[in-house]
Image 1 (cartoon, rainbow, N blue to C red):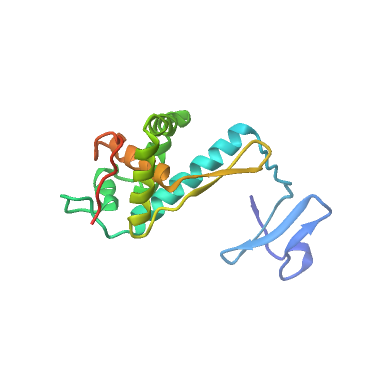
Image 2: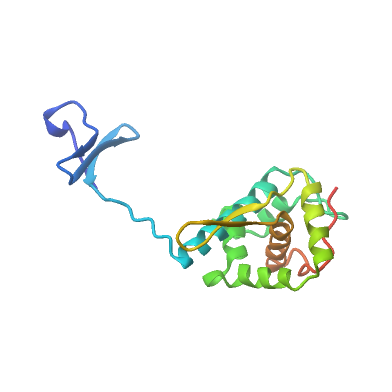
Length: 182
């Protein structure tokens, strides 16, 4: 990206010019770049990726804001994650990478494991997610074409978060009974 001084023979410039260039400023520096019209594909793969990002965002929000600890533990989930995060990584980026896994394999396995538990156990996970502070919410989901489908239940998001912690070696793989937090 070229740095410019006195763009268009003026003190400053912003906006597009001739449908080919964009003038703007960043941190006090003027610059010009090519005008790019972004694409926003709504393919099945893209929507799956967006859905997974929403799920991990809800997980991060809970981990970051809660002061609750799992029964019998002295550290919060965030503190546990930070303790195992490799040097040079941010804890939240690390948990997202581990939760989703290469090509989405980990989160797909977590969804499959959740699908295998009974309806009564799913209700228990929903109840547990609602009892947390802050409560883990249901997460909006979309389909190919960008249309909305049923939200992912809060209990499933909670299950996936516990599955992600198991991938880090911080928990056992979750099953039908949700963990207790206090």
